[in-house]
Amino acid sequence: MSDLQETLKWFGWGYNDSQFYGQDGIICFRGDKYPLGGCELRNFTKWVEKKFELTVDPSKPYPQLPQTYPRPVENAPFLTELRGSTKVEHSLEGIDRLIRCHGQTLNDIYSLWHNKFHRIPDIVVWPHCHDEVVQLVRLAHKHNVMMVPYGGGTSVSGAITCPQEEKRTICALDTSQMNRLLWLNRENLTVCFEAGIVGQDLERVLREQGLTVGHEPDSYEFSTLGGWVATRASGMKKNVYGNIEDLVVRVRMVTPTGTLERECSAPRVSCGPDFNHVILGSEGTLGVITEVVLKVRPLPVVKRYGSLAFPNFEQGVLFMREVALRRCQPASVRLMDNEQFMFGQALKPEKSWWTSLVDGLKQRYVTAWKGIDLSEICAATLLFEGDLKDVKRQEAIIYEIAAKFKGFPAGGQNGERGYILTFVIAYIRDFGLHQGIVAESFETSVPWDRCSLLCRSVKQRVVSECHKRRITFYTISCRVTQTYDAGACIYFYFGFRCVDVANPVALFEAIEHSARDEILSCGGSLSHHHGVGKIRSNWYRKAVTDTGSSLYSATKRHLDPKNIFALGNLLPLEEDIQKAAASSPASPASPPKAKL
Image (cartoon, rainbow, N blue to C red; front, top):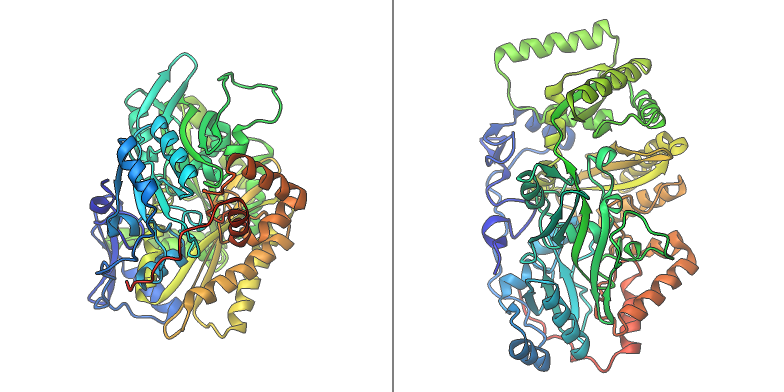
């Protein structure tokens, strides 16, 4: 019913024609959508061999589509009324159901590859507008059908993964057909889009008008506007344009008890609690987001990349703190530690003789003249946007601050590569899994006075957990990705060789959970922008207190009294199931089991 099957992989991240693969013992990348397309990555191959003692095996097959699918749990009255009283498109086809049963967590992809999903949506629906969503939610509430709002399917928190213990009929509500620009007000610089539009399509439409929202999360190519709102997303250029909560003017969400929205589109109101913020971060548990009014800006005249090198991570963090203190952040400034810096260097394609010679001279300049240890060096990537005068002023300030902390310019080309490679990293996760490496990212936000401590402590905790579990070949790295007056966002990347490990994902999750405990003990948050979902729900009550948790539960009971949006996000799934049982009529029988 959509282009998902044609354009995107059914078994992992991204486009069908974009993929890391092995050929003659060398890791390569196919596809023309990214700068690495068509490249042989010999340095990356050496990095993998050294880090994991693993040789690429090109003969390993990727998973094939299953021959059979779990039999759907039928709710005949719902299906009859859906067909008779609405014009909403729907499907009971196995493949349509399978690709909408999961997001993009490591657990999701591993379960998909190993046919572990015994519960997938029983029906998929494609509404085309707000009014059709209203009809569908009313029907689901009337017939006690569980609903999963599905946007781009890029969740890395387990938020859209089908609850495996759900007994009711599960309906996946795919918002991909709700992708229109509804109106644009040039005088107010506001725009209204339907929530199912994908990030890159939204920006393409606005570019034609000379405008931009400027929201660029790592998942920007595939994630949707509704998903950004539902998870309180953050983008790489938030320093100029803001996070999603800064960009939203109004939002409409359909719930079983009515549509929640603010009537006024004024830039700010003092009218009691802001219900936009009830919807922001609700993670599909309260209703379906259908339309969003956003702020827009004129397209920048100049876009310029840059990069900086620092002798060590601590100096880099001090630089980031000073930039935030002076509120002079460029559109994007991201600091990577040494491990991530070396990883990024390894991803550079094979060079010509001349380029290799020049790089060798640059390295000698760094190590001999600058006196920097290559085992300590770290780097920051920069993106400047604005008019030429402003960009030049920003560059001068940033490079002046960098020098204060022993940093020096490392070139615009490196900055551009570092920025764009962000969109390729997710493909590496799937290639690693295919070759016997489990890897994933996790993130947090932390006050400035605990930033360096948290980075050190979490990496040490992961190393300790690996040693305890006799994991020899692993990588753990971090980067500071967003800065604020009071703190920063930190991303961690962790992976280990899992050849001959019986349940590698369970082992990975156990270590990641230990890392999360360490994050919280160091004063970090449960999440900066990925959201809570299912995989962090066990910490949610403590993070918001019992009072906050009860307030959320009371809101959910009012808006969704039958718990048809029982995704198990925020509060653990067991609590959702108990509420559903207490407030709903008898559910249909347990679904029959069928082999995948």
